[in-house]
Length: 310
Image (cartoon, rainbow, N blue to C red; front, side, top):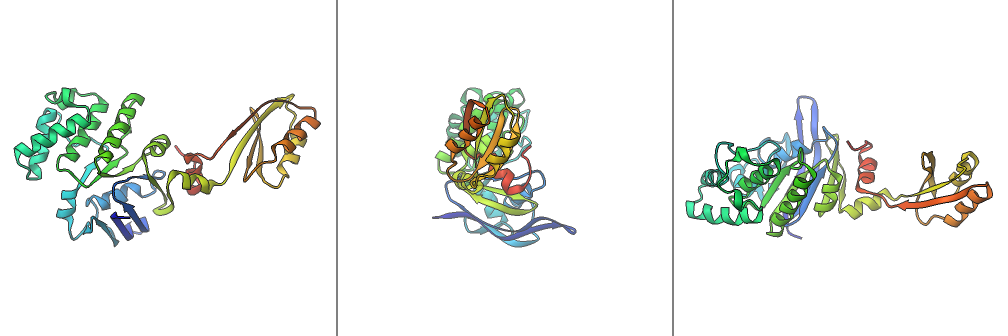
């Protein structure tokens, strides 16, 4: 496993308030890594440390072996940062923006043009290359933001909640863009509030809360750590008081809650479903529907952070 980002005991404080609390993390080269957490979890501050916008109070972070503090200039040359706000110039065209940002990195014009052509083709912006940035749709502006961050061929692309404010069609186009960029070998670090986005895109996910790492792994690893499944049983006439008590006392049942659909049974391991159905039938209930579901990434988030996802 070749690492591209190494975080060693990073803390960041503002006065007595510790925003990041002794975080250590390794990120493998070539993957899409998701950073999740509720507001105030510390994820944006961690992004600022990695993108050389904020110095850590203690600890070290390395990107491709370079220290984000002592090697700041070199780090900035190998990362691309896509902030939530637009970083390009509205009055310039797409091509002019890319020429400008390429020149900031000292790239000669002929190389900027070659890289621009490749990027615009990948991001499906070729037909708009001579359009003013101010005339682009919201989704295209997000893609232009990404294009500007890619002009110098960074090893790592950092995306801070890129889907905020996008409609579903633009969001799907953005996901395809991120996958295409990653397919070229670029490591991507993304913060997001969308469970679907994290589940679809990310190879590994970190959930932070109150400045600390709560859980980290693949989506499937995170879901398995929830360790519970749900069975929903709907029946008629729906008199559940005694049934709820009997089902709730079964060993593998962790909770049995009445809701508008009937009884929601949360369990671990294999549930003795036949035994449960017989309890319903013996108490005069006619089974109308039995449904089941496995843990979701949102379940893992709620378990890990102790908070509902908003």
